Amino acid sequence: MNKIQVALLGLGTVGKGVYHHLHTHQRIIERELGVSIEIAVIVVKHPEKHHDFAGEAILTSNFQVVLDNPKIAIVFEAIIGKEPAFTYLTKSIQAGKHVITANKEMFAYHGNELVKLANANHVRVGYEATTAGGIPIIQTLKQLFQVNQIRKITGILNGTSNYILTEMRENRLSLDEALQQAQYLGYAEEDPTNDIEGYDAFYKLMILCQLLYDRQPEWTSVKRRGISAITLEDILAQYSQGKRIKHLASVEIIDNQIEASVEPVALASNHPLFAIEGVDNAIVLEGDIVGKVTLSGPGAGSFPTASAMIEDLAIIIRSLKGSNEASRLIESASN
Ligand SMILES: NC(=O)c1ccc[n+]([C@@H]2O[C@H](COP(=O)([O-])OP(=O)(O)OC[C@H]3O[C@@H](n4cnc5c(N)ncnc54)[C@H](OP(=O)(O)O)[C@@H]3O)[C@@H](O)[C@H]2O)c1
Image (cartoon, rainbow, N blue to C red; front, side, top):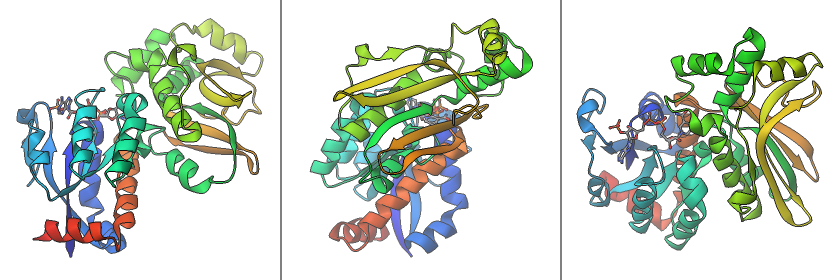
């Protein structure tokens, strides 16, 4: 069996999910893709925390180890924030490595640059995991809607906010109580700013804008409101009229301008996102031929995010089949 070596940057919630499923699904990967995957290097910030987990891989905080190994063909990135993630992926691409990222903040800022750099270096960038977790929205837009003009997208893109709003309504909780519950269950970070102030949904929306329209709106022109000012009274007032408050990220083209917003909106029961509850995400696409299509599913978490990254891996490996590059990467890895 031929072998491809990969590196994993980050071994937290997402990185562990990738590590775990590359092992549990090894046989399926071998059968479907004709190669085995070896995790050669894992880069973390504090290696001393992880010795029990890393198995045979080299565990290090030194990213140079990845660059110094020409047999590493694909780099998974699941670390936090713009840097050093952007620098690591830039260097990986320049070294001829394909990259797969879950890092929405970094990708909202730098995705376009990375994709251009990857094209120039004849490698690929997988970023399905950056947006809506396990829902295959990126590949759906890239591969399955090539002729339809997507006029509008409306999504629940932040599972933490959706969970908090659902809990407030169902169990008559204050925002603070529901947030504490979300933190207790691991759905919200200790610092919940990115989720409850709308930044997380905003980054995902900008990634979708870039993919759909090949540009992003001026960030300061986008209305970005989170759920932090929503009270139980607001929710119950809407509920008494049969409505639910949902945190929506929307984008559409109006008069050739991108109109985007991220904000809480009261939805009537006939809206396709009305019934999306808890940590789930969902996206309504409006194509000019097909009409409205709704995709829903787990928007975050270790396994759904790992699922998106491993499917990106499969796409990259299939794209290599029969190419000169495949023999370079696969043969060199098996030497
Ligand atoms: N959690 C989710 O459900 C989810 C869903 C979609 C996308 N994402 C994105 O995926 C990424 C990872 O999220 P996560 O939840 O897995 O985070 P996490 O649990 O906090 O893990 C982050 C990992 O990154 C490592 N790391 C941090 N800074 C680093 C540095 N400078 N150099 C090397 N490694 C570094 C940490 O190392 P140590 O362990 O040594 O500290 C840790 O292993 C984020 O960009 C996040 O936005 C997360």
